[in-house]
Amino acid sequence: MSHALVRPRTDASKPVSGRPLRLVVVGAGGRGATYAAYAARTGRAVIVAIAEPDPRRAAEARARHPEAELHEDWRELVENPPQADAVIIATQDSDHVQPAVHFADLGYHILLEKPMATSEKDTRRIAAAVRRSGVMLAVCHVLRYTPYTNGVKEIVDSGRLGDIVSVEHLEPVGWWHQAHSYVRGNWRREDQASPMLLAKSSHDLDWISYIVGKRVTKVSSFGGLMHFRAENRPATATDNCLDCPVERSCPYSAKRLYLGCLGDADRERWPLGAVTDARTPEGIEEALRDGPYGRCVYACDNDVVDHQVVVLEYEDGVTASFTMTGFTPFTHRKTRIFGTRGSLEGDGVRATVTDFVTGEAQTHVLGLDGPDAGSGHGGGDERLVDAFLDALATGDPTHILSDPATSLESHLVAWAAERSRRSGTVETLTG
Image (tube, rainbow, N blue to C red; front, side, top):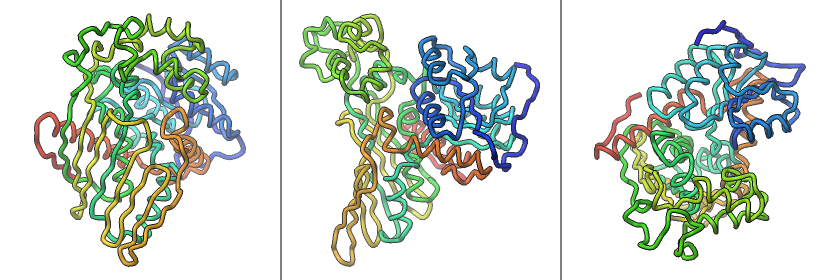
């Protein structure tokens, strides 16, 4: 692609004052729409241009931001760059690298949905483009920004637990979420998205490192696709849940899941919003009949894992274990942190600290309910956007809680874990 190099901002450290921040949105699906809507709602930013190829999503974006230019392809914005301070990139995972590199070269600061890219090479390309251009990059590691994380980090950094020795962390994906997103949905295949560890759990690998505060040195991993396979299909099951004689007794019934969203505003927004705009039983059943979300979970083309364990060693010998599994209730992550003077058990809202000197246990209410995208990741979505806007307004990138090198490192840990899972090796990460 050829284009004239236009830099809306030539000095990344120069604050913006006296006017609202001007943002471009590339990808107006669930995540892009959420970030853009909140940024505009604060009154601190305006959306000046949107690139979205899907007609329905484009129409919704136009309704929310009527003053914004609307384009079908982000390349049109690269060819004729609008005057803006930053771009929100929330396309499908495999489509991150090209817009990120081009907009970085144009001088736009970037809010980039995770994962950064779907290959190690492309992740490094984005990090290099940002470094070369001197722009700010905020990868959407929303778990870093939740009130719960802030509270846990304060407890760990205060020394109340002593020196951290080891961490156990669980991501309970949820049985119906696994079926929705990773068996029937957009993230079901590695060649169309990325390994599940990266697509779903780059949040978690980044979070553990943030809490530990040290660099990962060694990684090993085990896991695979155990259940959602053709050989586990009941003998009388049909290809679509609407016709299936075992639907009523199947844990992964699409009919039960999506019709059950009706009347719940959060669940109508997600996961139902990914399936259809309809809000009637008849409309939902039509979408399940004609679209991918009504398919039998044992008759899909999915290949991403449904369970995985990652073992991490950090500098100074600190260890951590991470478990991602689709066979749980849909709820907050669970964490245990073991120190030399105390331990912490947390559930995403509350953290109980046991003091080894007194033997007393104290429970702190730190977070907000709502572990999912539909409810804003426990406050993480809004705080992430606030931090990005603060960085743009002041020219100070320290408002962003993970710099490009830190975000790159968490992705490299995920790739090392995938190499380990496939080859049975222990992977060593160098600085």
